[in-house]
Image (cartoon, rainbow, N blue to C red):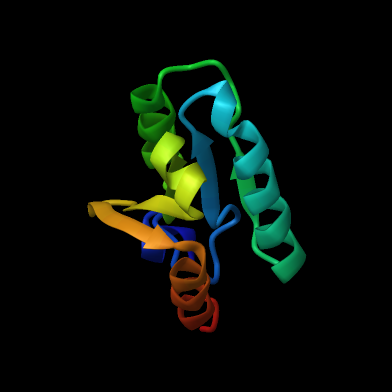
Length: 110
């Protein structure tokens, strides 16, 4: 499987399916709530709350081949949204959390 996918596992098989990346400390509370919500559903989530620049966090998520990254800035936290990034594709735009959950539900089955 590892050789077949070259480490780029599909969403349902990936060891870590989603990384949650808050831009600053102000978004950590919203991000932690989102992480808890995703884990309660059963997704494998990495929460990166380090004091690194967001570009570094995104780059590391890409290097680890995590299928999706949810970037959370001030606007996203205020509006209950996330900025979705897909591994190998890049920015997919700003989405409501319900839209992201619906997308993940469709991808979570082999």
